[in-house]
View (tube, helix red, strand yellow):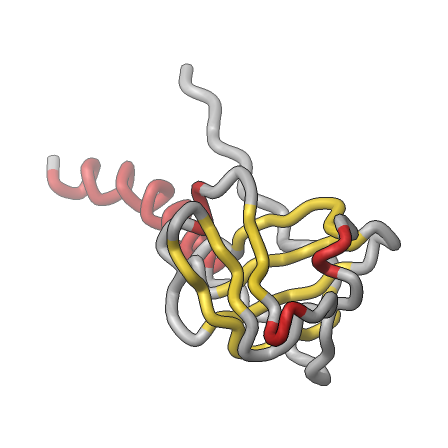
Length: 127
């Protein structure tokens, strides 16, 4: 009986490990940059990193950027919109500026140009 249970449990554990490995995808690395004209409506879309440690932002020119934070941004994975507080009311988003997710302030640690966010794993159909 226990051998049958262990055999049935292996595929479930393998799927869980694969999902966890995908969620823990490393953040994009590269040279630090800024996102120009961020306060002038140039954001096309955004998507939170699965761990809340950063956000992928796409501008109107369809360039992707990965913005990482000093600490985990708890509300970001659930936010339907974000706001920006730039230093000195500038129009570029840079290191040290703030992103608002609901009422939470997320301080920016770094910005790098990146590709699009990783694809989310599809959920298995019940049945």
